[in-house]
Length: 195
Image 1 (tube, rainbow, N blue to C red):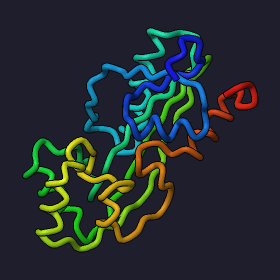
Image 2: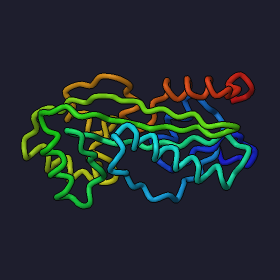
Image 3: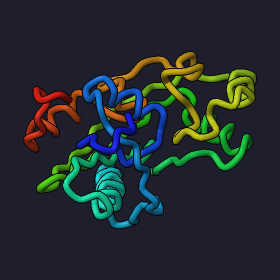
Image 4: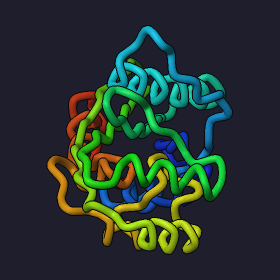
C-alpha cells in the first residue's frame, strides 16, 4: 500500500477510510495532511465539509504533484450545529445524551486533485434510539467514542445505539465509496488500468 510508485494518495490516516478505499483502489499511499480542521462560521455544514476535504487534499497535492490525491472530512450535524470529537469521557456522554432519540446528519466532503479539482459533499441521516444513562456510560467506558466525531462508530459497538439510517452507510463510517467512485470516474481516473 505504501509503494512509492502508487499514483493515488489518501490524505488521511483514518483506519476506517483506509479500509473503505481498499474496496475500490488496490494500490495507494497514505499521507495525512497537517491542516488545522477549522470550520468557517459563514459556510453551511455541507460547505464546511467540502472545504475541509479540499484543504486536506490541497496540502498533500502541493507536496506530491502529479498524483491523484483524495481528501475527505466528515462532520456530524445536529440542529445545524457541528458536533466534533469528544474532549473527554464526560463530553462523550454529553454528546450521546444530545443525540439520544433524535436524528442527525453525517456529512462527508471529498476532494480529488489531479490535473484539476473535483469535490462533493454526501449527506446521510442517522436516527439514534432513546438511550438510557446506563447504555451511554457503558458505551463511553468501552473507549470507542473517544476519537470519533459525534462520539460513536456505527460499524462498531455503536451499532447498538442506532435505530436506523438513510443514505450511504460508508459515508457514516467516513468515506462514501459509491460517491467517491463516481467522482473519480468523472475526473477521469483510470480504474481499468491496474487500480
